[in-house]
Length: 91
Image (tube, rainbow, N blue to C red):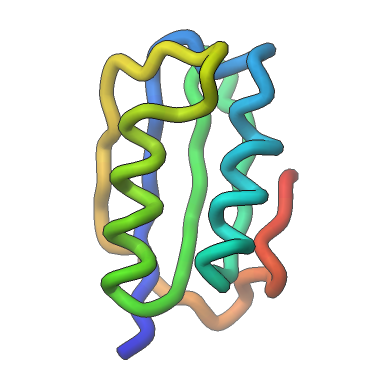
């Protein structure tokens, strides 16, 4: 079953390659969606795919790339996955 989730990641997640690493991880998991920086210093993404892949992405987001420090990952269902880019992209 294909579902969509919105993630907001906070901590030291800008300027450390977080978006590019997220894009690689999401593409390896064959997820659709996007990732972008937020004005508040966090990173936001929407990803769509099967639940197992979304769970694995969530696990990866909790750690992030080596230069990042993840303080919190907020996860919520996303409204729709109809217009999400495939493959996953950086905005």
